[in-house]
Length: 64
Image (tube, rainbow, N blue to C red; front, side, top):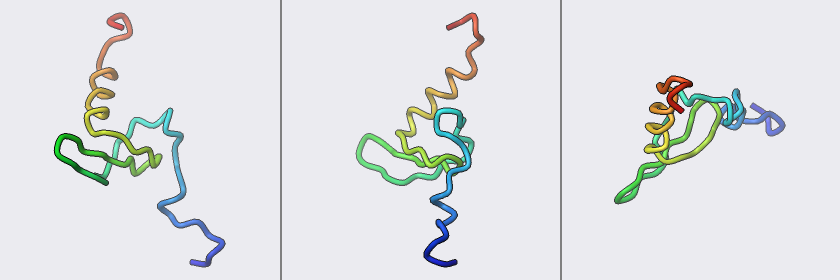
């Protein structure tokens, strides 16, 4: 790899707004929170947000 090529981890495959974050990796943890990074889009967020996203996704459109 040369200096002009971006590293594979810096290349984002999907826009964070459109990504469903199927693969995440823990990047930080403290007493009451855990932060994860999506391996698809690079977005970093609290792991509790991922659970909330899954719940919202399961809701039927008429339940919103």
